Image (cartoon, rainbow, N blue to C red; front, top):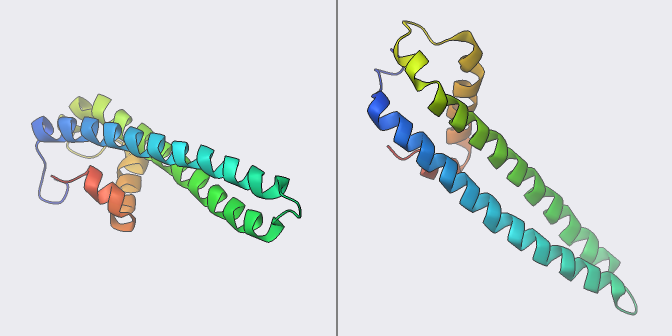
Length: 121
């Protein structure tokens, strides 16, 4: 048993809720990124251009883009586990092809407050 066990009847809805929460977070962050892109364009269009401020905002934009990509990966892992919960339930050991997905979600839950929120049990 994994960490003392789990209940498939509770895990599947939790994974589906996590997918929804990741979608919401991604959409929110993407909308903010579009706004930041407009702000950066305005800074560069000014006379004289505010290149240093635009560079700093661009770096933050790149970090946010990486975060959105990470949310998408975690979302895919949640969807995979949700679809394969029946396989996990009927196996004595974790299937080898799911070890990576489960490990990723466990690792991410310790690193991010949002991921912990998505998996409140």
